[in-house]
Image 1 (cartoon, rainbow, N blue to C red):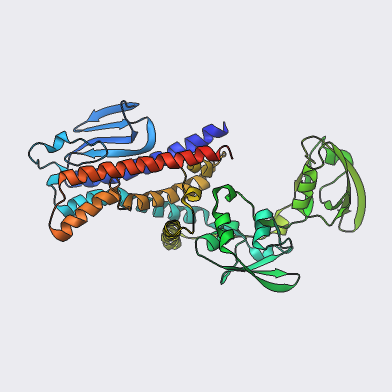
Image 2: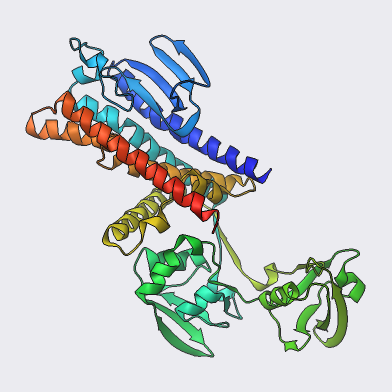
Length: 444
């Protein structure tokens, strides 16, 4: 069921992106009276899952979910249909249109993807606002995992700045982005009442950007373990625990926080654990619980009273510039990441991923807010990737048209054909490489 939910989310998101992207080419081609022979969601080598013809255009769904295409008469594209170029140029063909019209047709899909991404972000801000945990509400500081320890963070630290930017939102993503994308070199923390500046080594940034570390916690809020509810017939109920109890000791360990309690429980399977409990903020009592093989105590924890969740709501007009800003920020981050890959600061094998990586981002639970947020980001990313000057992508065609507009000389059909073939081979190779990386990651 988990896999099915992931697949359905990916397929729906890709379908929206592909149909609207190809729709951008379709609409602009029709606008300039170029004939569209095919409009396909997904690719259809050898056969189609579904197709029908209306007017001059065949509409269909392919079986290979790696994109989609529109086939415009008189244009060299992924189909490599050269026979259509043998006859006289016809007025309905792409090659007969003025350069500026061909440029708009090739940019049509990219423009639609940019508009789609911005529009989704606008509606997310308008309908949901933005919510985040305030850093100042984390009174007991942080706890760190092994990766956070490597950077120099310690349990109890309070993060104040990353680089020169105040750490306002308690969000691991903000710290990672600042270090990996923006190139921040320091983290300022408050430790035992004193302010310290931690220097971040380049080797750690590379470690942080590795694919295997994407799900690392790095740090989390150090919160008291206060029981919110005790489940029936569980070790907690049998031990006499009650709602409102705070765990302040387990066996020989004193003054425990939530992450320490969970770690201790994980190592106490099929064992008896002696708890020290603070009840009603005044009474200290000792209780013993026999933990089963699942390591479950049988309680829910109080969380909200120890953090401050800041929620900002926006009107529609306020959401418009925020949608543009979010799109710009995401695109800028992608450009910086690509730049760092070319300079070697980030390794391509840690940054590339296939449809498997995309599926993991959606998760095993259908969360519409996450779905639309990811779809917006993928739409902006799709626009950016298609604009790259690689033959076989929209950007490759744009380069040829711009060359013609600047020099007055049109590239020959042979040059376009061979360049598109080379570009197509490179793209297929890149897809295979990314897919292979994801397959290997499944066994890590």
